[in-house]
Length: 465
Image (cartoon, rainbow, N blue to C red; front, side):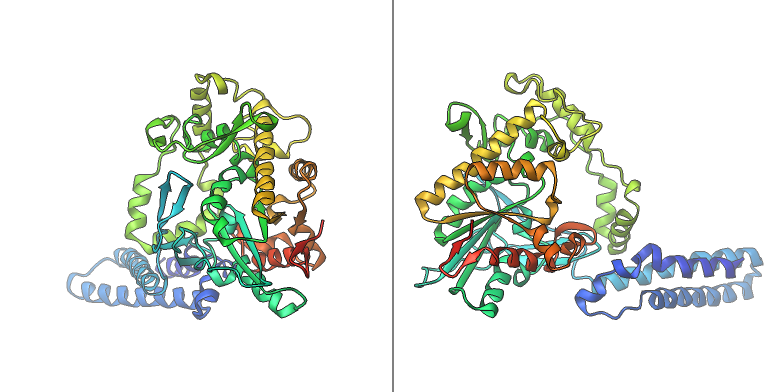
């Protein structure tokens, strides 16, 4: 009995605890030896040997029954194996818990605390720490005055530009400088990135105006991702996050008397006092408490979540339904749920990939997105930069989302660069552009993004139509 149990533990431990070899990127990233099976097998044998010695001593004095010995051997083996694994992870992982040092800025929305160390991991693909620069961004220090004949490119976006998953040296703004120097035929390029998670073009306007503008870019690249239409909507984004859409902590465009029927909605510094207070998803206090205590628990949970997502149900649909019910009491948004099948499209983003006319709240989101792009276009004319939109691999063209995006850009005469088209041309795949368990750009994704932009640059620091 004990032999069978020990064999089962030895075989199951490396698969359950560390995941299959192709998922265990830790060894590649930190240069540790690939030996998870040998490691877990060794810890199991050590546990079994220690348990056997303990039982031999116990049996010599107290004549422990054989079945009790067998049971104790299994228990001791498990305990010792888990203890060795916990100790191993504590000495090899740079950290176990993510730390997100964001702060609210009433002029911008959210930025990071300058000088703080951000730590970000999904427990599977990456364990990345980055020091926040003086502007509250995950990038290098913003350079000073621009040298003659230098071409400056500013990348503006959400978490793809934020890129908390990779070192700064692997980010698109650094990579494009290196590639341009290696290729030649272009003026010296300086690039920078301003981006923060959860922002769309409407919220990114403040990032440009308060941070990016002092970079004096010649070209501004708007990095477009699959949730941007949602993130440009005050009502949709508020429903997803539990904010009062009338008093948001970020800027949006809402229906009004401005150009094309939209006006810029300013940030409410007192937004915390006006939360929906409805449909909040429980944070899981027990889960959080155990995670703070055990590196092994976080590590195993990350792999189980990646391999068996059904074990971790997403309750966001329940929260959104409650928030929609709350929003019915607001005159401007009383019909937010009209035509929106929450059961089929709980996350809102997928609705923009639905062909044909959309429910009213989603058509308003498209109008708000157009207003945001139009404002960037106007800023380009006043600040003397050229505008280029980069569609990331996350858009998976051809799709109704991309059709809607390109229609807006075409109407505003904003050039469009398609990363997916470039990836196909070089023989790559969308899966290679992202992490195995995270949809953001991997280092290869950043390289392909930089190459996509370089293809559109002219020797005179211009952008091809």
